[in-house]
Image 1 (cartoon, rainbow, N blue to C red):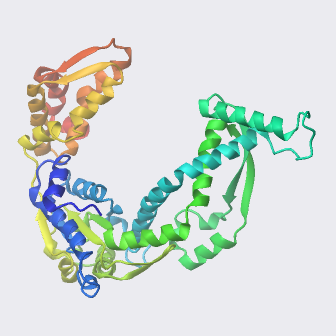
Image 2: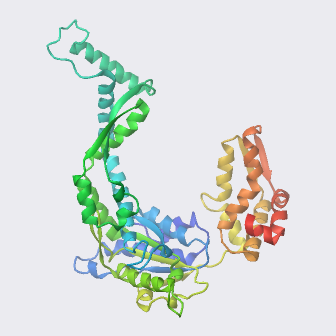
Image 3: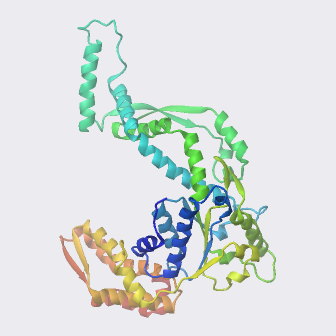
Length: 445
C-alpha cells in the first residue's frame, strides 16, 4: 500500500471530485488506519478492526466515485455492489457471500497483472521462438548433408532471416495454424449455475474434465496475442497468485455497498420485505467478520473495509438492524450539488466533462472552446432541471452535454478543421426549448 497521508489522499481525490470534504476525510483516515495497523505488533494487529463507513446523500454527488478513486489510488481490490441484487438465503437470487467471491476475483486480476509484468520479457521471447517454429518448421536432422536444402546450417540462416522479418513487423499478415486448448465444461455448469454450485464440486469438475484442442488458422499478429497469453499462463505460479490475492483481499479489500437504504423493511413485514430483512441478517456476519469459501480458498472478512451508501429518502440509517448499524460507526452526509458545484465540476477535475469532449472532437480536427458564460449557463440548466425534475446530481451534466454537442458531434467528420466557440447564446439555443418544457425535460434532460 502506498504510504499516503490523509492530507495527500484528500488532495488526490480533490483532483477528480468536487467538494464533499467530510466524506473524503473519512475515507482518507480509514485508509491510513490500515497502514497503521500493518505496523502494530502481531498480538494487537488482529484486534484492530476497520472502521466501516456509511455515506448518506442523494444520487450523483460523488459517493461511488470517492470509493472507486480511493481503491485505484491505493491499489486495493475493489468492487461495487447494489444491496438490492441480493436475496435472503433460500430465496432465488444471489447470496451476500458472492460479494466476497467477486472481491477475490478482482484481487486475482490485480496480482496476476503484477506477476505478468515480471514474466513479460521471457514470455515474449518464448512467443518469438514458437512463431519461428510455425513459420520455418522443425529443426532438420543433424545428419543431413551440408549442401542439402534441409541442412541445419541453411535452416539456421532461414530462421534468423525470419526472426529479423518478425522484428520488423513485415510478417504480421502471414497466416499460421496454431493449437488452441479449451476446457470442456458441460452446459449445466456454466453461467449463473456455477455460483449456486458447491465450490468443492466445481473445483473437482475443473480438474477431471478433459481438455479439448482444436487447430485454428490466424494471422501472425493474432497468433502472437494468443501465444503470449498461453506463455504467461505457463510462467505464472497460480498457487502463488491465489495466495497473494486472498491476502490482498483480506487486508486491503474494499466493498462498496450501494442502495443499502433499499433493504430497509417496512413496519409491516411481509412478502419482499421479509427478504430485505433477511438480506440485512445475512449481511451482518460478512461485515462483522466471518470466513467465506471461494474457489481459491477460504477468505476472512474481518479486515475488509465496507463502505455503504444510500440516499435514505424514505428511510433513515436508524431503520437498519441495530447490529448492522453498529458495524458502520462512521457516518458522513454528502451535500446536494449547488450551481457553484456544477461550475467547478465542469472545469476543475483532471478529466472534467468539458475536457473530455474537447479531446474527443479534437480527434476530428475540431478545436472546441468553452467560454466562461457557457460554463455558467450549463451549470444553471443542470441545477434548474435537477430542482424541477428528479435530482440525479452530477449525472445530469452527461445528458445536458450530450444534448448540447449532439449536432456538432454528428457533423464533425464532415467539417473542415477549425475552431468552435461555445458561449451562453449557443447553450441557450440548444437547451432552452427542452429545459423550458418541464414534461419534456423529464425525458430528454
